[in-house]
Image 1 (cartoon, helix red, strand yellow):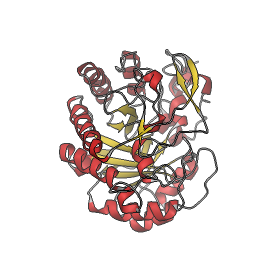
Image 2 (cartoon, helix red, strand yellow; image 1 turned 120 degrees about the vertical axis):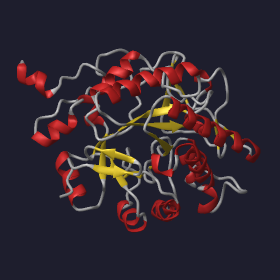
Image 3 (tube, one colour; image 1 turned 90 degrees about the horizontal axis):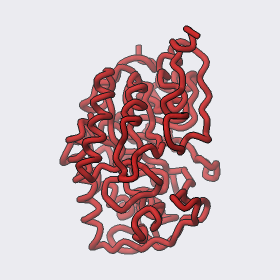
Image 4 (cartoon, helix red, strand yellow; image 1 turned 180 degrees about the vertical axis):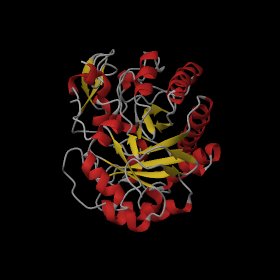
Length: 360
């Protein structure tokens, strides 16, 4: 019987259960974007997840959109991530790295004065960015020239190679949440003409070229892709999100991906639609769903075949042993949002395990 706690094979990777850890930016890397020993402890604590998808990680230098997020472009960063993957594997876990470019969500204060790049010169207007100098308004990005795009693709390819050297089990291409690849996908952020603008086929070109470059390093079956067709975070919108994700679902069948990771809703609640049904009807590979699932809803969703696995975000922040808690129907620790992006162990490695509470 297929249930939330049964094994599943995602491409070339066999998982012990279908309770996955979603990528969660936590800003605990050092000033050079090198993963720390604290990060290794954090991820190792959560190794009982069927799969950990590690946080959004800079594929190349100069694309920081947070303060102290990790990278995978330097030797020190590769070594830092190797400590993380070794710690997770020692606990019997599996871990993918989400590789990413921040696009217009980057800020000059985080990138030695560099102006951010995007498909079009349109700034994020519904939020502010955290910098060492405090919150600042997002700046108007520079429109990428077509001639610059091959360097972006190559950056993702090198990041995939570095992730392999760092000992990951695969990679997830971040095509969601208003960062560079998602900016190209959605017509609210992509107003360009030419081969990377206009039609759905053209707007998806960069994502597909990145997938092909990354799959050339790993093989398709160790590559996942994350999409968020409804999420209005980072001033994102699309005139036809259902049409966009339906086209993508069909097109991604051309690859033998490990999985497609779909965010089903909008953080801010501004765009409403059913994007699960068209994806499930048109995408024939493994489907991971994410965003706001309770244990009960996740169980029903997997049992019914709507999804092959569920990725949990905030519940994994506060519950390092989330699969055990869901299996036992145990009470969950409550996450503290004040520590989501702070420094140090508080709210990061100090949430109690169920066994610790039983002994108290």
